[in-house]
Length: 453
Image (cartoon, rainbow, N blue to C red; front, side, top):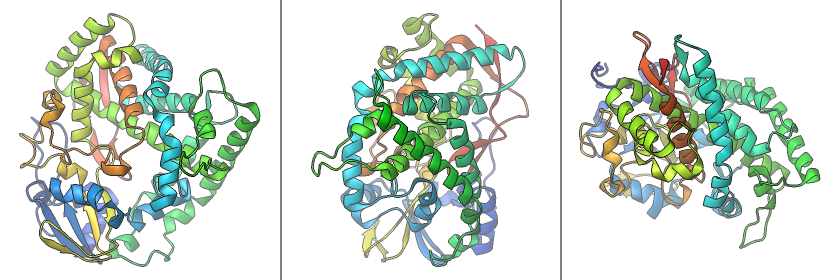
């Protein structure tokens, strides 16, 4: 049994109100991973149970601080998560633990400095302009803006990663990754029942050939760049090739470069595209917000596309993005495995237990947010009012997303450019359905009409 949806509120995932059991959970997971979250998780600090393995969903900010910061070494990413992603991105910094993670993080940190991110802003503005031209060309017909945002953000990541030098086919990589995610992202019965990690998962075997081809293409691109050298404005591959861990002086080899590049490609377009798609859906859902946003855009940008220099002067556009990330966090649920016994919220955590951070429930928790299912960008007007560890779209602690500033700059530039040119309205009967495979996607697309202004 699940909670009912309210047409006066933006679309949301109906959460479970009764115990489901192993096979009920399995059926729910096949449809939507987030749907296994109990509604109780939006009202209690912690919920525990057993589905093959003992698990604990943690929503208490103090306990989350312990998991993600104070005792983060005891809570590495779960083997389920690693097994899903390792065939695609190897031991990149997203998966690696301990010293192997630390040196990669130190080597890559300068890549996402404010100066380097700002240098890439013109590429974001150009991609936003092309998106606006495609939407305008559709005329009065409804447009699936979710699909267009995927294209737009992939244009950006392809250009900022490989400078469009022709040594890399981003479309081929995109198709291979999508094929992999479609298969590997479906949590199998083996994972739900807690079977050993060495038991093969069928979906991950099916998609192996696509991964092999993608890795080969990426390796060729890395070697071609080594021979060519950097361009006038260094892109992400140039910066990674130059990157060096200041402590160990270690540099990434070809396999390490490939794995981290593929991580950036996946994270750098999928999550950003979702944030933009959900932001546009929410603006169409609430014309008042859209009008307020447009007034800010007019005052800052006039009739021109938004630029990197405009981002700091568009606080309300950023608030819309922040609220979209609250309501529809791309990583709606993450899991950790306890390496040793611990205590969270006064409850015993045993070695081997799975600790789940249901970010979707945390962001809609009734004790942490006022009117949690409502769309209110203004709740982010003063970031100091948002208590730490109640809002985790990019994680927190040492492993907070390294590309957060890049993603937010891109979102504000593209969102401001589109809202400055069009008045978006929903299409009756075509509401998106929030469904999580690896990320929380709008199943069925985000269909809107776009009236030129």
